[in-house]
Amino acid sequence: MDTFQEATNAEETLDPPDWAEVGALSHRILDDAIAYLKDVRDRPVWRGMPAEVRAFFGAPLPRSPAPAADVYDDVARNLMPYPMGNVHPRFWSWYMGSSNFTGALGDFLAAIQGSNLGGGNHAAGLMDSQVVNWMKEMVGFPTSASGTLVSGGSMANIIGLTVARNVKAGVDVRERGVGAIPRPLRYYASDQVHSCHRKAMELLGLGNRALRRIPTDAGLRIDIAALKAAIAEDRAAGFKPACVIGTAGTVNTGAVDDLQALASVAGEEDLWFHVDGCIGALIAVAPESRSLVAGIERADSIALDPHKWLHAPFEAGCALVRDASAHRNTFAVTPEYLESTPRGLASGEWLHDYGLQTSRGFRALKIWMALKEHGVEKFGRLIDQNIAQARYLTGLIEAEPALELMAPTTINIVCFRHRLDGASEERLKVFNTEIMLRLQEEGTAALSDTTVQGRHCLRVAIANHRTRRSDLDLLVAEMLRLGREVEAATPA
Ligand SMILES: *Cc1c(COP(=O)(O)O)cnc(C)c1O
Image (cartoon, rainbow, N blue to C red; front, side):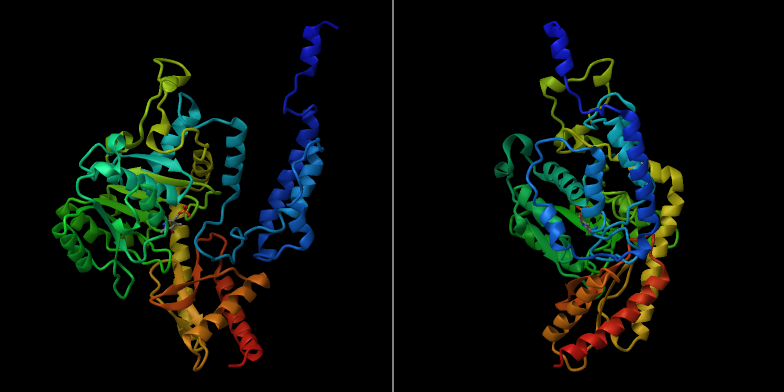
């Protein structure tokens, strides 16, 4: 054999030697996946992992090959039975969507097509822009606005807050840095603001203290009078009030700030108006509830989260900015190796000019396919359905003397706890935490907990298209049973 032939024979690829075999395995994986979701209700929400499963994930770097079927068997045995549980109908912890099968197919096809959404002239780029346009339409933003799909709400908020900083800095902050800002910028949000904003302030170089937490009213919405007072105080002290963040659906209780009032304050005070709509922006498409977020269309920027109430498989967030050029001016850079060409692959828009990533995943496809399949009206009805379910659960709690509602229910988040006669706040916390942990460990339901107005409570966030009212009946029944059990086991 000549050396050319030898070299050719030695060339390797990741493609399988036998595509038919891969086809058979793929069909088996697909059948298993369909069964997995079809039967999700019959499995526990969550279960602890046995020691051998934990040990499995300590195995060292594989050096030699294994058949793909064996690799899948490892996954089927050690991974699939131990999910976080958010695809289950009784998962209500923290705040996340419950995914959907079509979206999962979208993720698969996105990986098969393999495009990098940093930009360029190809169909995935057009689809990415189309999905951003659909998001604008959903929240009532003008077509002239811009936007970008990102990893999630945290990143979407960083995008909005960064544009706000650069627009309000009074200097070219991209060239000169935050040290050159003449008057220190101040941002404002309610004391219920999500923790990602703190990270954003730190990252932006403005510092956590530049984000003033404004007190909230009894409904846990930002107190507008207190906001105005804080702005006036800061101006008098030589700061530059730059941005107000309204929250459409707080993570603690689902409170929705008065977005109309905030838009007006921002207008009067010349502030950037950013809305953290990770939970609630999409209420704008829910026919029964959309008035709750009226005013969101007046924002300068919005963060929203398709992996929450659109149930996109993780990850998918979206930042929208009314002033497209302000958005682009914040992030665009054109290095010599990424210059556009008049025709061909590099003639499309560089989508990486709207955010921090250069390479970008093809997040749009999973959102696009699910929206096309169901239509936005169904997603709106599902949002209303979750809000109605939260109201239903609130009614059950109010009718049950052993349970106590801990915050007003505005949207799909219910804060409550089990009562315990004469118990201190500390004992109530221990008692309720124990109930929550037993619900998880028995695989019945996943709740989380928080502290509202200084009092510990359990928290049910229903962003779940699989939840039924009977699941909430079961939750209440199980909480009462566990309440008796835990009380008996731990007398005062
Ligand atoms: C979830 C959430 C975030 C963060 O979004 P991620 O997608 O988890 O990064 C920010 N703000 C609010 C109000 C949220 O609920």
